[in-house]
Length: 242
Length: 241
Figure 1 (tube, chains in turn orange, brown):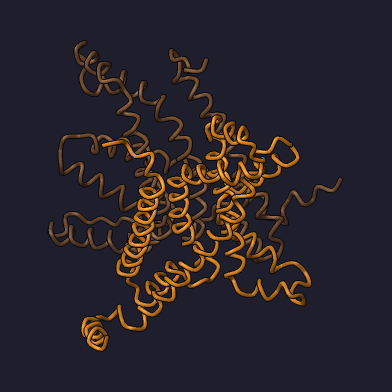
Figure 2 (cartoon, each protein chain N blue to C red):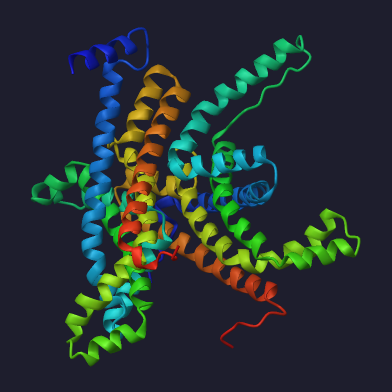
């Protein structure tokens, strides 16, 4: 460890931009980006599963509000949703005196709010599509075995729908990582915010932005690799023989 | 009925100007994306290893990096890069080439968005190119059509039917991506709404109409794509008809 530290210090000495100080800022940015993306994806998926099931309901009063929600959130830019969450609470008269202010004061909470609702909308549609394409025979077989509706959903529909949704959901995760770059607009020090800081401090756009682009690429390819592994594991029964 | 709010506290005209700018950015970058996508798809399907390599590198990099980072790189770095290039040309030619190329926010925004979506269009076009029956192109060549004419009269009309669903999707995503140009300083409708919100402390009055503006453009373009799909499907019947 000592040697490694020394090696890094030696490598950095003589480099004007990548000092320990700026690397620290990039590190903070990486932590914030991963934190934002991970938490919003996690809550988003928890919201999306029940919404996707209800989205396929026979009752218009359940089906249409969910359709409206996913349509509006998918058809408008995330940036507008972020501004609405960021300014929307802050400028309500009297909000400063309530407990809500605690959450509004820190820009990370409005950002999490907007990102979570956005990814939940996309994920709902992805899962809904996967649930809809469940082979009819599987559901009929479950009913013939005497399974209740809830048990059929839990044991038959969801496990196979999740598998079918996996490739599309992998794309959504990468999309969310890239979309999270706009968090820097509401003063969150994420990866892009860190790059902008380094650019503005040293007036070195190429170094600052290409370095951060490489970091994002590593993250994207890492996510891709994870999902490819998951697909190989969970979709083994769909692989062509031989 | 009191319609004074329609003035948007004096921001009404600027919101409309911003909407017009959003549309211009979207359409211009779509044109760039279509051309780049077409070239890249052709390069990916060509037999040259170099062309294939460049095209694959381009689409891989674009899909790994956020739009905003690319836009900032081009906007903040583009001017420096272009200046270095023109300085080099000036020195190399002994002052005979004396250019100054200005990269403003509009150019940077349009080029970046076009460049990003060119990579996505390339995938759409590649699939569509491959979906055209090889016999069709062979027949075109047998009739003595030049490669360009065969592309224009045979391959393009036939592949559009396969490409349109992907093009429609990409256009919708592109439209939303134009909101990012507000971050590098272009006064599109998001920027106007942001400034108005900061000045008046009424976020919903400005941001919700802008969101509706995006919904309106999206719905209108959906109609256009439905018409195009009908037009390019002439002569084909759906399997489930």
